[in-house]
Length: 343
Ligand SMILES: [Zn+2]
Image (tube, rainbow, N blue to C red; front, side, top):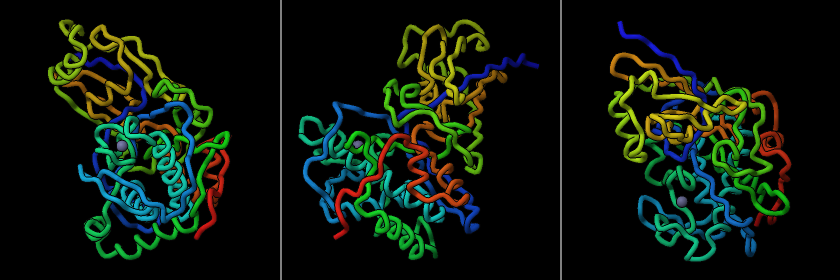
């Protein structure tokens, strides 16, 4: 028998795209594909919206490497389809619509000039990488694959959530917020400061029920020790893995919510988000043990844990809360503002 060493490391997030997965939906007993939103946060000087917008406002989005022009309505429809199960309760979908609209405007404000636009965008204001902007599903070709015979119904539900919240965004001190969201926080969300080192007053840790309803709330990743060491060495050539694997992880710092802020790995201090990325973990809230030639990571939560937890929004909606209450809970200190009356 190999000696098992347990390490409890909790951590949080990273800017990595998580795999597509299937979620059981209690609300309508349905199952569908759902890709959670996981993003790094970019904050330049507080972005300012220039000009007004409505759902007919035209955007440029880089989708699978190709720049396309579409209306804000069309874009948000594709974002909601990709980011939240369409069978979720109506108030959760509306909260997601406001968060997605707000985050879209935040990004547009960040990238107002060509110099500010990241290279991967190819000149567009947004991209479809959920690790950078927001995931996007092109329903003109993907609706059936996503939802089968429920395609028409689900498309309708998403469009209703967008129409019902048209023009509404979340602001802090008058400007659109970085309304990031995640699939399933643990019992509390994480703060942007702990995860990305960026202190934002509206992205602080709050209570978050319902995360355990996500089918990926608990995860396990088994990875060959040498493969993991190689992944670390690629970024940190000075790391030393000559000692037994049970000594590789030391001195972790965790957030109040349980994720690892940073930990020493092979003598090098790394962010929990970096360990998450290298090992391909669902979250940075993890434990790791040595099992033979492998490292076995077990995780709690799905995503970076910052901002609105989608499963938390689902729980609160099923509990009778309205979308504005859900948003006020997850983005404290923000106001819901009607940017422009519906056309
Ligand atoms: Zn992007």
